[in-house]
Amino acid sequence: MLTTAFAPERTSPHVDGKRTKSVTIIGAGPGGLAAALLLANSGVKVRIIERLPQVGGRCSKIEADGFRFDLGPTFFLYPTVLERIFRLIGRDLHREIPMVRLDPQYRILFGSGGELLCTPNLDKMEAEVRKISVADAGNVRRFISENRTKLEAFRPVLESPFSGWKDLFKLSLLKLLPILRPWKSLDGELNRYFEDPRIRLAFAFQSKYLGMSPFNCPSLFSILSYLEYEFGVWHPIGGCNAVSEGMARIAREMGVEISLGESVEKILFEGRKAVGVRTDAGEYRSDAVVMNADFAQAASKLIPNNLRRNWTDKKIAKKKFSCSTFMMYLGIEGRYDDISHHTIYTSADYVQNLKDIETEHKLTDDTSFYVQNASVTDSTLAPKGMSTIYILAPVTNMNENVDWTKEAPAFRAKILKQLEKIGIKGIEKRIRYEKVVTPADWQNQYEVYRGATFNLAHNLGQMLHLRPRNRFDDVEGVYLVGGGTHPGSGLPVIYESARITSRLLLNDLSLDASGLEEANQPAAVVS
Image (cartoon, rainbow, N blue to C red; front, side, top):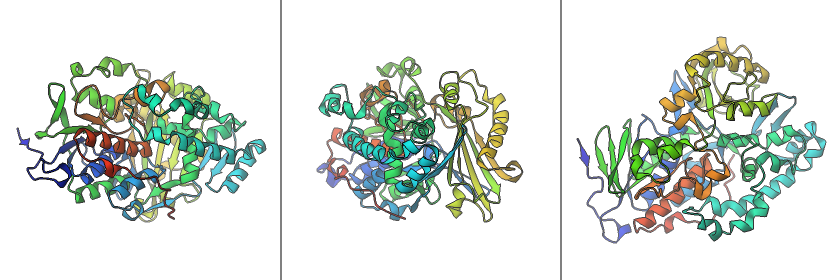
């Protein structure tokens, strides 16, 4: 077996003449790539090992027959976080990775009647809301204003590690209770602003970015829809996967080694301390290991159960996990230029649809779904005269009630029929490329625990210090980035998890972490 001495014997000016420190990152997802940039910029020798043949993880691409799709995230929100990371390494995000701000941001069609063309232009947005509820239109600006205050108050929490319950007091969270109102659900919080349930839903569906229902999701997450209106919904040219590829390109320019198509089999330990990893190609020794793989799946696979105290296999199995998603990626003959870039359809009985997903674990006939028709914005995604259609339907995570080997064909047909409700008709005869990903595929092909595409749920019992910590305290020398750790799921906070983790790691290696700090600056305005 090949053994790689991963820390070269040159000296580094960052470590006072001592041997250059080395870090192995498991997984080339957004969090792993962001951590690699920050650590490499701080003088650390970094190697990323990725099981798949391309970078990005759930933020990678599907490419075939001239069509290009995002595998997972298609909304690029709150670029401020990644802009800051790029500034810290001496780069400009928008110069390295071109993107456009969408207006309108998306179209919402309510199965119960009515629709909204959601726009960051608040005058126009108020007019849209007024079409459905005159009384609610006047509260749009109040919602934006109060959530601006909420984000600023809570932002230090999102940017800080949580090593234990004492940190709750250190950051004066108790003073934030009147603003955060953790006793309320997201829908309950929105009821302070909007009477019409459809308007509340328009400002609450973003809880699906966390894989949760707005009736169970904590009220804190009203900031998600605020972020869209304040900082924009963006489309990177080529898709969100282009951000991952751009980060990987820059990482390689900075000396980061990225091994693709290589599977980590276990983390190597001496006692309780991680000293490297073993892959299907060899062993790599390093001073620390950053785990960017799906937390529950990777912890169970890579770290012996007897070394885990707080996150044993038994305890992980008892945790609450997000929903899953049924995905369709369609390469289409022709175009649908009258369909918005992003369209959300909500079930006529949205509450029951959520119950079917979260508690009854069954499939809904009139299911909610989301469609991306990005070719109306980005001509790079399909051959000339053709287009890409990306479809996501939230569904139960893996459960014995649903056998996807049997259910997938019928559910596919149901989704194609549902598309008629948003104006996409006769699509099946125009399909030139098709790929379907079910919860079973998320679990088996992409190694996502229970196929829960948004990781651990974000209930109050699984947030802050109760979530797997950035410095994984079950063992030594293992650090976490990604949606399975603090601050949580969604690209902006995943990028922030990389900055939190990198600061902890550099401090633990007695390296200078000051280069990861910067006064916050407003997001750049790019059109």
